Length: 349
Ligand code: ZN
Image 1 (cartoon, rainbow, N blue to C red):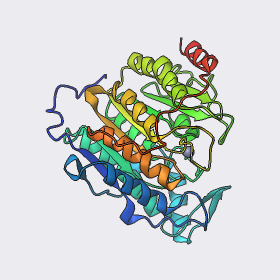
Image 2 (cartoon, rainbow, N blue to C red):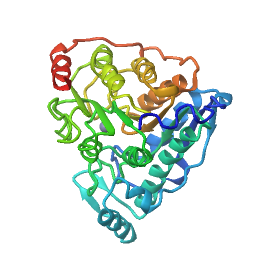
Image 3 (tube, helix red, strand yellow):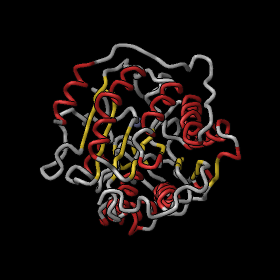
Image 4 (cartoon, rainbow, N blue to C red):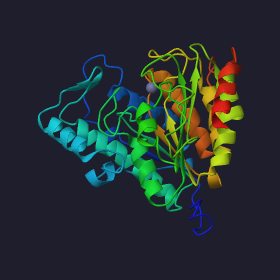
């Protein structure tokens, strides 16, 4: 099953970065001062367009995902509830997850944007794509909204690829553990989920010993990071655990849950990354992507300027142009917690 499409299609005649943004179809209103606000997406898209020359990117319009497509990762009863909730004008679905009349439509566009990004790469039309979407997805469970997330965008894409016989790795560097993505694929030997996240922190899951269910041991990797961790800790996690694990798993597709709330300016967490750190991490990710192909999906990131800079820097790397790093955004270093690296590797073997 490994890489069944590799070598059979002429790849990436167009090496521009594909960007699929849902900015113009964003009717997911949230209460005043809610951090997961429409301005996030406007900032991220502006950052990408400022960092990547127009001739190095190609924008693709998002389609809305069908209910059948969403059902690849979600229970139909849950989707029916979301439709009814929107028709009723929205509600509060958990402690910090609110919906409005346009929320389900926005969520469908977000998932559809990720599917469009996957299609661009899967069909050989592009090598790399970046889906700029909200609401984020990685906390959404198969049957429940959670942590600002309604539909698990990356999970819908991963499940779709897996059903086509692909072997998928999802790398999630959002500062929060993607409990929803982990849960959806916990027993799936063909989808590896890898998360770096601050711990202890919301949502409380993501311990090193959560390594996958009975039929998928080793296909789930968590690297919990202490508050204050900086870029060198992330690089150590990638170099010493994540990249070797991906090489061993031998995926045919790699998806990146690209949250930017591990940036040091982010108001919701306490890691210390900068846009230059995200540049280094992006190069690490690309080093293990089959044919250099990658689909990145926006997750969190709640400081508008940090989000714009970081998403822009990552997009520049994906587009093959030199990212310009603003003053004060140089790579960071701090304490490297070798104990968690050793623990993660011990769980893996
Ligand atoms: Zn997050």
